[in-house]
Length: 503
Image (cartoon, rainbow, N blue to C red; front, side, top):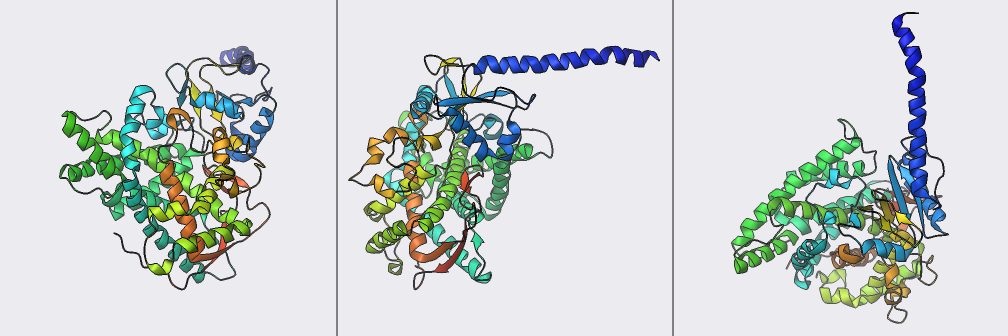
């Protein structure tokens, strides 16, 4: 036997022993953190349960919810990270209320900093975060929301007409999938409402491609290497941030000249100009790059969450014809497409039942089912269990939506009526927009968008779902949507489409 072979024969047992020792230490590390909390007792080496999470996230999270039934939470191990799934609503509130340096950090995604960048609202807390939210409030005043509503209606109409044309060019016997069509409509809405004229046609197309790469990377393993989806998502996000930074700079030029705001970034920058003029110093977090990063937050929230909700609107209205009939009756009393007039804020407020439908859609199918946080320090979750530092927590707003509410498994918009007021009685269970210091600042905008879409969609179009086995099952894309992509048959319902004019 030559010396090298002899050396290998001596080294191999040591390497095997070392490998087995590492596996044993990994198991011990996990079990010490797990203690007697429900969760798997044996781990797949190194990867844990990341493969089931990636291949079938719906089944993975359903299993975690089942494990959590006894104590309100459960644990698991994913790609070297200890995770805690929170099912109990009050425990979720405990997490949301303790976003601070010595407790939890909201991350949005387990590898969010690599994707979203460092300048991001979701990583902020304390007075700094409160001050920024106060400045952002100018983006969602009644005047601003009214401006956005006009733009939203123009874009919704454009896309509804194109959907009907698309279906008519296909065989009438063939349904069309709405998922990508809704995504494109929402992307144009977000681009127009948030960025207005600052995005050229070329920039919009590049933005669309980069955003698709970003979304794809959210659902993949975090391999930051050339050719992998995660790296493509990271590079796409960097290009998007560069574009948004340029938009912020252009908006500042216009607002400094005293021009009238025409989109969200203008309302935001106008407020910054006012503060700077009064105090002679610009407010914190007002550089072009920082504004661009915060706009990315808005775009991510508005784009994916709204796309999810609009798909569930179509699905749930089709499966609940009595609800659809009531919505159509209410809308027809308040607005007519033949008037050629855009819906006003006052008319939206009159649509009480349609608003209740929007609220119930978001409760019944909350778009972002989980809100990831990281434990900055050890934190006592209950009297008998302390979350270890470094753990990733997943408070489930989806599970909270089915707690407390009367007959929570039923889709029932009447629960939000003035008579039942379940939105008040079970307010703590309605967590689709979050809670605590990071509660969604744009929830009124999001609900307006949902109500506008419902009113226009059911008035202008007739629709029918193409139903197959399992078509309404939940999949993650990364927000939740119907498994079949929401396949529908469409036809025009109104005598003619409205001819809107922007005021």
